[in-house]
Image 1 (cartoon, rainbow, N blue to C red):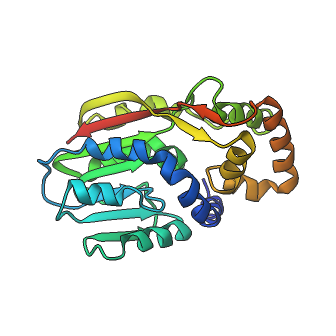
Image 2 (image 1 turned 30 degrees about the vertical axis):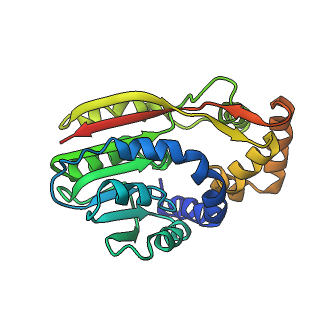
Length: 256
């Protein structure tokens, strides 16, 4: 992936930051809490890193679970980093770095927590290998990400099906390389993680996903006409009224 393409993705997330904080952060909270609860008290010295921190929704839960611990969020998007810094105001142990979250300094972290950022990176398996190498002896990795299939018939899947008819699917073979990327760690958990989620209606979900979610960079690149056609087909396939579903994420926990 070229630097120009990465810059476009970052700009898309810059534009999505406000809406993401309002719409998705509350809905993703159960997965964030589960990822943080996986951290034990017996961590080695050092900071907890949150790569792909977005607006930093992990911060409050981490500060409560690990009082006195330095917490460092890393995100490529300037807009997301600005939101993250706003959230961290008043916490002298919290820091936000605007930069590449896919490569962390070796042996620098007591723990690494990431929720729904891994699948956004250009080479997720390489990033996970870097995160594993960043752990100090006894450190813990807790990563939650969206796999290729989250649920049959849910809004994520329906939108993906509509999109695939217009844009070729990306290479998802990296999912098969995630566990091998952790060969130097002890795998403690690799399991599905599902919680209920609700949207007022299909149109609200579509608007949030394309303006404030992972499709914002694509929407910015393809333009309003493309998104309008996508919306029309998505709404044709979607149910009416409130849309409740239970998407399935994957949770990986490993110790150095």
